Image (tube, rainbow, N blue to C red; front, side):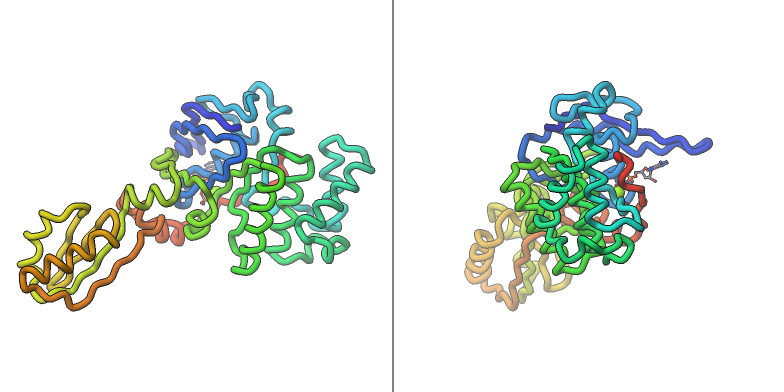
Length: 328
Ligand SMILES: Nc1ncnc2c1ncn2[C@@H]1O[C@H](COP(=O)(O)OP(=O)(O)OP(=O)(O)O)[C@@H](O)[C@H]1O
Ligand SMILES: [Mg+2]
């Protein structure tokens, strides 16, 4: 569904150049649900905008559903829906009219676009809002409308740039229900960006971590966590200095740091290593006072890869807004 090779984008602003995307190779198959994760300015939106033909790549190539984004723009656009990071919908239209107009833009007859609007109003639970003016919707309601707008022409591929940002937990959960259902019922391929690590972790089957314009990791969330971070065991023991040299003989330990009586032990699987550590302590008269184990998060993965925390990077920057609806 998506294939890119050496995709780059360099922006020039006066004398300054920004290498927003520095060579991205992607292969995303039909029906996949993929999350792009990365700090502010990593190049996620720029990548999506190249894939949707809104931006021309500086170099490299990209194909969507087999069509080249440079040479076959019309067919690429018909193959995808795009919900940008900003809000796309106009302000003074009513919700239903906005959907009908979108259908007309894609060349549907008036009748077809009306019935499609009604289908989407039902699918995204916009019924009570259909006659409301777009400017009166709440942020979460608008996001739902944005997604409906992206789906008007039944694209096999949907790009969502931060679909859930700023939503309350209940609305986020509802929106995810819609996204998952879309996929289940229509087999839509979905590529989205998010700053919510828990969301990428639990919902996406595949997580692509982008940093400074390149892909630095690409796998399932669980594979990334076990390969790159591993579980953490924190032990408080009666004699840390005596225990440390004994750890050399324990399989599955990746890294050990000592702080006073506390040992931070990075392991592949805590449930396998912890009993082993208890036995070892017992055998050598070292008492284990407390033992904690934690599973890694995707933030630990990012930290392991870059030495920086994704959470902090995400909190520090401001999102670069863009106007959605550029496809219209
Ligand atoms: N039109 C533009 N002109 C100049 N620089 C740009 C332009 N668009 C994006 N950039 C720069 O390119 C880099 C990548 O931006 P991009 O919007 O792709 O990041 P992002 O990963 O989507 O970040 P965020 O999480 O904040 O949305 C940033 O340094 C940004 O300032
Ligand atoms: Mg962005």
